[in-house]
Image 1: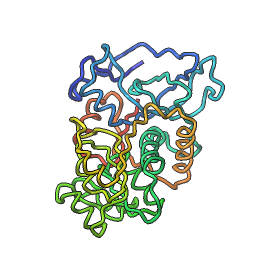
Image 2 (image 1 turned 90 degrees about the vertical axis):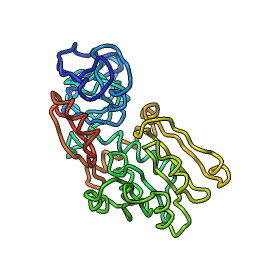
Image 3 (image 1 turned 135 degrees about the vertical axis):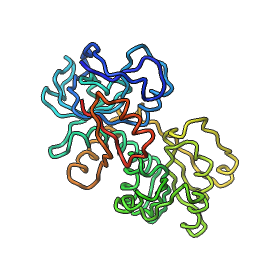
Image 4 (image 1 turned 60 degrees about the horizontal axis):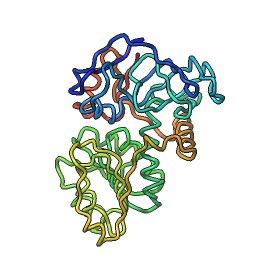
Length: 318
């Protein structure tokens, strides 16, 4: 099969489109013929910084058609359309994935949107609802609101009845964020985010911050109201995740760390993603796709995802 691989971590140019051996479908796995690949933030971080064995097939998320089923799998069949998550291997024509890390794609949902939904909306739901506990009438600040997780968090917080402060850079995407449910949109290049959050919350601070950036954690704490909650779920900004904990202790604030890779197989989390896929198929939520590339252009697709400030997901097609 063809796949996008790298031998040594580095810039997007380290990706090569080559022939590699077909993956082996284990007893608990299904083999998917990939139809759409969602480039995730973790894919970019791994390719930049994580050493692996030669010809490493990067990639967390994809969707396609089941072409083979392991002997112990009873809930998937050849011909099923599925979305899948795993820690590597999606940037390829074929992908062997544990059946427990897959979801059936509902009728009417585009495969490309299904590929990007489990991580973006699954992460956002766990952060905004399960850990963040957002309630009607509360105010939430969402960093990197133009990214896949951010766009999902904006929609879910809006549907929960919250006031949504969406943070991004640049003016050209602000209208789209408002369409998707942002009450206020803050350009971080033009404003001090913590100060603006306090102004928009009448000086009180926000009840919840969703922070997938990491380098913004101190600003996130400064934007929080007393007894507010901060959910941090990534390190897109790079560097160390250092914060001064004296302030949150004094203000009785709560910090929640979220890493979805280890919990997608939990029954409650898995079922939530099923519900989100159904909601997308019914048009109640929207997985936003910025641009699509061919898999053979994976280096160009990664460069675009890193540098072009896409609105939503970047998709590749084998």
